[in-house]
Image (cartoon, rainbow, N blue to C red):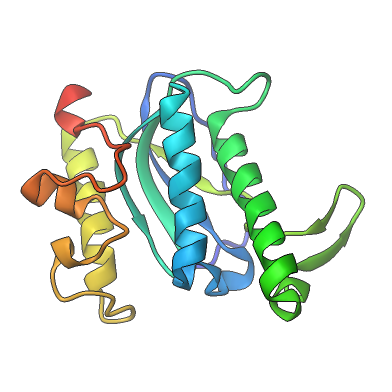
Length: 183
């Protein structure tokens, strides 16, 4: 779904949110393992630094969905800003080295940056009830199975999702917190 107006996306520490960030122009930058690993690395670091807790996630070819809680800022920067900034810097570094032609597709003429990987105004929706949280988690875990994507035939088959964690206790990347601990 395209948004014609800026999203009003505000989040507070200590509350659980459904978060979505989309690659600029819906390009499939996150289709390759190297880019997914950048996302995982950033989430792992923010969890290790005790800035966030991640309850659920899925990394899709052109966007990411998270259920997470911000715990504290990274200096003056929110964890959300740190996540988006770090991943953008790493995308630029990798593309500069390995695919300069693709890097050109993210070029912008702005006073504060030369490249823009993430669309502006990522979405944060406060999950105020367990029922709403369960709906969002189901959506996240079913996203790779969607007819549009066909990334897996079963939730637990898709590697870059928390579905395995909730279905069989496997946390391959070691950064998840079970949602039961938050409610």
